[in-house]
Length: 477
Image: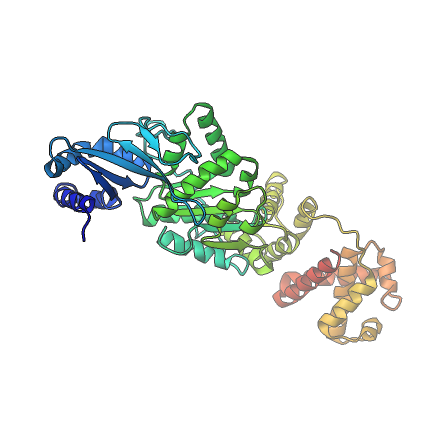
């Protein structure tokens, strides 16, 4: 049987639906729930304080007229505002407000003192724009097109794509992207935001670092305006918060984030968070927040593998209109293994050195520049080690390498070994020659020059030498 308050409110909605635009009706009236009626007073529940304020500012006359038609001239409207939906242990926190009036609390566990009649203020002030127009704070360079996909980030990138296509409408809410420094968390999170703005131009998107969020909260707290702070963030359709691990030192800011998170999630809005570690390993963050972080999908970004590092360098070169020898690209990708940021930093440094010194980029210049990026190894590579690696690579017997044979495959293997020994060891040319059956230093010089010439003319030969060089470098680490 239909309850009295449901009947009254449904009659009001039937009138309102014919007056306001359909989209406005869905946004501002469908979420309202009637919760009680006493004499001439109808109580309705609304999702947030901002929701209440918007109704009072834009639809108060319409609400008054329709309600008086149902309950008479003395009809009044009261609001019950959801502040926290609660959980299994705690009941929902609500706040009762009379129309055009002030609040009374339904329980005394409120985290924030709320003042109803203050307007919502925008902490991201944009000169020349209206009060509630919000700059998304996104870098337009950070897109999916500029984000290189590899085994190290495939799940994260595709999850981000899914979220961008249907923000708030997938099980990936929140989407937590985690991983070490310089692996692309911020880039990917902002790529989602930029894609949402492209696909859903009416969505309100905002990117904010945890540091800025905390500083804003503290400023509003000093000015007794926490209410404005919370309600501003409740306006957002897609909220991106970077580096949530830094909330561990801001207990009160966590309270604000908890209230904002609850409202957005309940309203079908999308949250995207980044962190240097998975939610289960975040220390100093409230368990109630961590439990909500775990509601959606946690996807990690790992250190890119060798092939992905090459793709990253080549993509950056294409975007910037740069050209570089393939062997240099491979050399950088092989030696810079920590993160994408250092990889791009090495490329920029190499280009700067080339420009300032008016010198073409080659392998020697790359080696010089990368000394500032690669830690010097304490492990010494010997001539014997290189000889064995070359023999294994070309499947040549070790004793053949030392013999005086004219077989082409043996001669080339010996020449490459001498070339690598000159690069990776501190031995003199004479000492290197002695390790190859007592050959003299002129033979070593000739062998090294032959290898360089062949690398310039024979692509297959160059690939073999570069691969061997990378193996020797790896052994030195």
